[in-house]
Image (tube, rainbow over the protein chains, first blue to last red):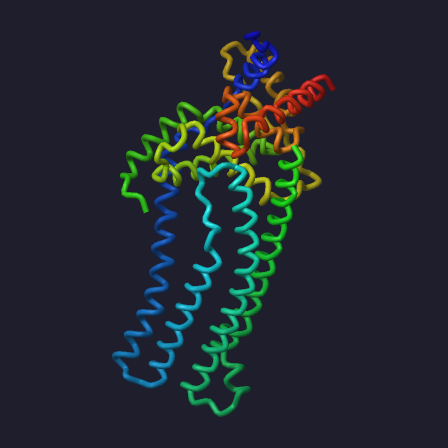
Length: 191
Length: 169
């Protein structure tokens, strides 16, 4: 077989340069340990909210707290169900072929956009439940007095503005990513 | 979650980086617009390899496995990066490991020219070319990208023609 001099020259030129940040492996290991802590914290928050309200309901034996605990668990169950449904089939094994990865990335983006709608519905549901519960358990007689309480203003009004801004930003990012992925797939398929 | 001790995984990662770190850096450069982007992408690739190591069962070669991860991260990077800002003029820095400074400069210039040409290729061509330049055969390239060997051959023929043209310009 004839030697391919052009290819050999390109390979030599290509491999002549390299840059590897020092001690990267240990840095990655350290960062990853922090990421694992993040997962532990997220799970902890779920357990604290679900378990905390359940424990409060058992200890206090108050009807309003039992309603709160039941509501929290129903919302947790809905959130988990939505999360599992939206992630189904979109899990990305890192070592998959690039063709499969591209399809999965597009699916993940589409699911991400669906998830935003589900998250908005969940937010409305949670906020509605919380406000009704606070109003009912606080024994309020005037909606205006309730709606202008600092805790309600913080939770309902400021919280909603922050949530809406974050949701819009995230949706724009997901849409941009989906558009870019579709363009890249077209570029690869046209090669 | 994996039961592999963290120190074992760290040792495996260190060995992988010693063997293929340079190739991964060059691959990251083919997806990046500047040195900052290249370093960030390189870091992302290494993190992805670190996470994926416990799931590697030897269904393909270790080299195929890490190149798949690297290209997949590259695609994710292209999809998520922002459009270039008007004042974003910083170039990708290319350094050579040659001991003689003059030789190092000449090699860095050649490497820069080739990298520029590779970056101008459409993504599908760029992917096969970067793998070819790292010495992978048709079969291995097909395994990394999930396409047929004949498709690899067709892409490489067109890519080499384009590369020659870009290098002449």
